[in-house]
Image (tube, rainbow, N blue to C red; front, side, top):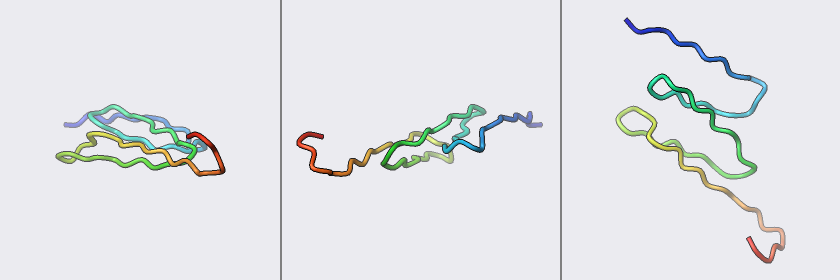
Length: 61
């Protein structure tokens, strides 16, 4: 018999959550970019985060 576990999240906050092995991980938003969830054997293995930088005449990034 599985034990039911409950977590509370703030629905007014922009984020997504990953549940793995009974633990919850909040993935906070970035200014610009993308997050890719990597799966292995039906479980989340990694989150690959990339950042996008808009060019506005900067000399250095």
